[in-house]
Amino acid sequence: MKRIAIVAAAALTLVGPLAGAASAQQLNGPLGGRVINQDARDRGDDRRDDRREVREDRREDRQDRRQAQRWNQRQHNGYYVANRFYYGQPTQQHMQRRDYRPAYQQWRRGDRLPTYARQQYRQVDWRRDRLREPPRGYHYVRDDRGEVLLVGIATGVILSILLSQ
Image: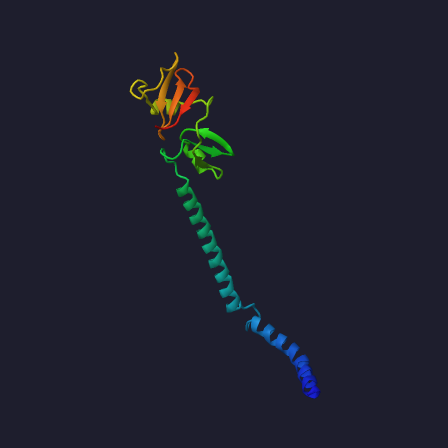
């Protein structure tokens, strides 16, 4: 058994350099030029195709993410850019940024109602809704989620918030 193993190892030792010379002859063409191995070319094409598919997948993922981040007036009252919240509808430039994301932020006392909201939100008839009379210089408005806000007419500062009824 040992003799067979020794003979096999010796044969491999002698055949190894011959195999290297044969492969070197295949790479050189008849005129001495280098011939490109078809298998290597196919592997390169496969790699390029794989990279192209990965790029297309990433592009589709970005498009899907952007579709999910579209502005919806009923769901959003602002947006984040660079981890800072802005009230109102974003510009096209902000929507193109990677760190853009639409959001909804609850109104808080002392917040300033943006100009677009002052124009868009409806005034509330405080007598019909059985609310107390607003102080001088203030009025009630209802936002798009049904909350009633007591807002300064000139400044837009929120004095109080009443939940939807």
